[in-house]
Image (cartoon, rainbow, N blue to C red; front, side, top):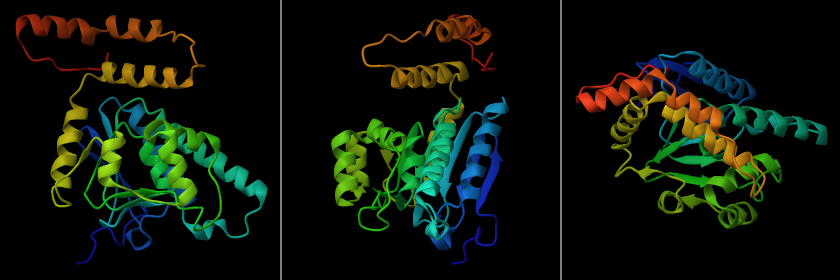
Length: 266
């Protein structure tokens, strides 16, 4: 069957109600990322954060074979050591933008999630997958390149040091069930066909939550990750913004009055 996205742009950014959908759309290359696609992903996050009507970012690969199969290898031709440093810095910057999105990010993973694709998925808040999903960074067997310390830290944060070490040192893939057991995945759908239904469920659930509560959880998780070991986290500005909001005051009255609450993010 012909892929409906086959003749479209390599990165599709589409609004569907309160959700901004980003589709990595190079199915013929298993959605391998070009530098322009990385830049477009970062721009999509900025669009998400700037628009109060948008409530959730949804990331997905086209074609059913891969979420993202890493960075397009053709872009590495002629690389020098300095080019490698600049490349890893660019990837760190893009992943930082995704990781620091002010609103929830959902990754829907169908097929292979490799290299830079795993880095992008690691920056999502909720990750769901089809049973055929697999996760790997096989650079010790393929290109012989490396990851920045920042990217490694992101992977360790969601997969654990021992698992990341075994994945990268042996170039092994983690299957969907292991990723679920590790806590990396929120859910594995019963089948690839059921993934769309579960994706819609999680998109709606994230889009309907209290925006300031969601922001506050993401912000304090960032602060916890960035602190030095043992240091306290100063969250007074975050707590004050949420408890002083019109949303909180309105929700209290709605709860006590047994009426529905409409969140405004203010």
